Image 1: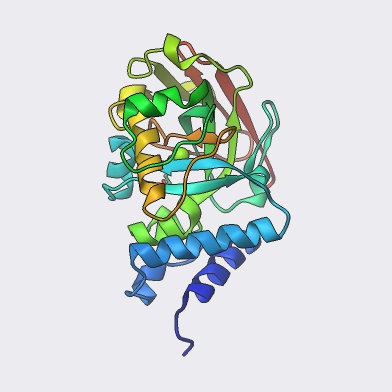
Image 2 (image 1 turned 60 degrees about the vertical axis):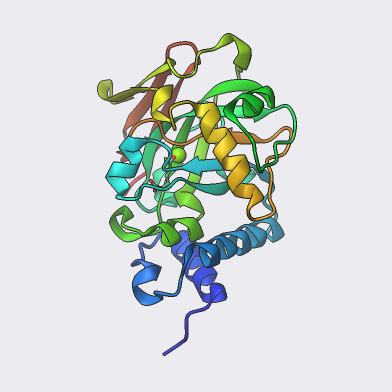
Length: 263
Ligand code: 0L1
Ligand code: MG
């Protein structure tokens, strides 16, 4: 039997993504896969994507809302890395056949004006580092069967990252009350969930501060110009070919994603 190692974790996750194949929890097979080891695996996974030609474009938070934490049975937020290969232009369809079992969730997104580096970042200092606030829509596609994972599994899997859309129009953070910013998630015209920005750690700027402080524990930071997805505001909905998903915010824009495919 092959021993588990960080290399093997990365190769297992990479092949699951490339072959669009679900896998079982790594933590069931390797109980030694702790959080620190999982973040090392995530960093290696990203290094390999970058070595393959992808470009880092941002940071994402996951499991920042109670709706998502309750659904996944994990109460701790986590971070991941966004690359240009995950970017979907506004209006572009989602190619279902490229993915395993995609789900869609609304996000409040930031574009950063300056670097943001912990420790000690507060929501107030975090908000001053933001250039603009945008509507976001994230497609998550956990490589784990039935989206069933423990925290180290999903950390190693780069927080289920797959695709995302950010509205081109950005808003001055000083002019918004993100705690009260409301969002409606619709699938095929039917309302499936609603929430306000308060769902995201009480305030999306708290989530941004959390990301900066957490990254600092691993020697990382958020860079000027990068996008930050602050975490799904509502639970994520499964999508299938033919579906239209729409996220509509009070002030931020609406985004619609059409799902195409044959499976
Ligand atoms: O698959 C997942 O739900 C984990 C990633 C969480 C994404 C989010 O909360 O935004
Ligand atoms: Mg998300």
